[in-house]
Every structure is written in C-alpha cells, then in structure tokens.
Image 1 (cartoon, rainbow, N blue to C red):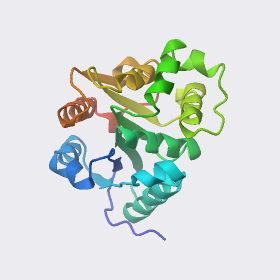
Image 2 (cartoon, rainbow, N blue to C red):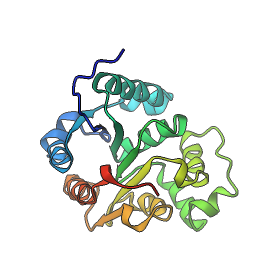
Image 3 (cartoon, rainbow, N blue to C red):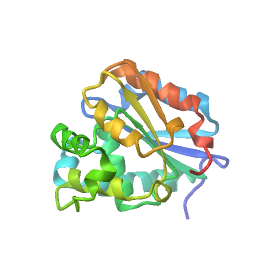
Image 4 (tube, rainbow, N blue to C red):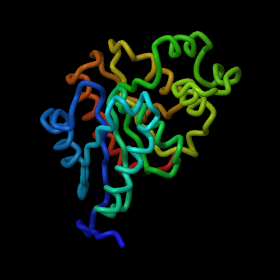
Length: 215
C-alpha cells in the first residue's frame, strides 16, 4: 500500500524540462517556488526523460512510470503536469497513451512537432481541418497532432498554454489556442527563453489553474 508521506497533499505537480535545461534550472529560475506560493499544499517533482527517449519511443513508458512512482510516494488528491518546449510533447504523448494520467496540463511554449509539419497544419487552416485528411500513421509527431485535433477537449485533462509572440515555435501554441477556452491561453511578447517561460508561468499561476472548474 502506498505510504502517504504528506497526509493533506492536494496537488502533485510533475514538471518536465525542455532540451538544454535541467531540473536544477527549473528550481533556480524560480518556477518551483512560484508554484508553491500559488497553491498549498503542493509538491513539485521534476522529471527529465532524456532526449534519447523521444527518438527511441521510450519517453512515454519512462515518464508514465516516473509519474506513477511519484503518485504512489506522495498520494496526492490530484496530479498536474507541466512542460516547457519539448517537455510539452513528452507530456502529451503520455496523455495520448493514458488519458487519465493527470487532472491538468500546463504547456509553456510547446514544441510538439517539426516546423515543417506545423507549417503544413497552419496552411490547412488549423488542426481541425488538417486532421480530416490525416490519420496519423506511424510518425510520432504526426500521430500526436492528429490525436490532439480529433480528441474532444472534454475528454482530456484541463490544458493551459503559454505562448511567446516572438518565439520561433509560437505557431504551435497558436494552433493549440484555437482548441481551448480563451482564458486558458496566455501570451507574452518575448522569445523562446527563460524570461518568457518565467513570465508565462506566473501568468498561468495567476489564473489559479489547480482550482479550475471543468470545461
């Protein structure tokens, strides 16, 4: 039987960094502290699945197992997931495999697919229209985007997206924004960097996502 180490723990927040950043960066840049100030009681755990996992297909298995271990250790009432950049792809791939994995997702400047595929989707006038002619196939990124387009938001964990207007991957967040309620999307004028990530994180925390009601 799991051991409840924090008897009244409300939220376990599992954070996944992007490429080139570490768990230590998430802490030193203040994201963990800000989460703790925004909601109590909360426990933040950072998991880095490693870049190789995206390539060999093990990212879902490894990350789902890490989330399960943290859930069993802390026994929270609810699990939330948060990612930055490529970390957002990892989390959505996990939810695609296991839809009940978490109560909610926070996606900061998400990188979900190559710029070529994102441009293809944008030319098709958005995910919903594009998905009508796409079945996903075996390519992980194309399959992920097709699943995201065809799955009702009511069947997914609650999703909040942070978008940086000058980010080279901003179109991905824009395409996702078309699927979400307006108050679940925040935007800053910055680029794909810590200044934007910290600003977006705080803006989303200001929306009190962990207390949000169903769609």
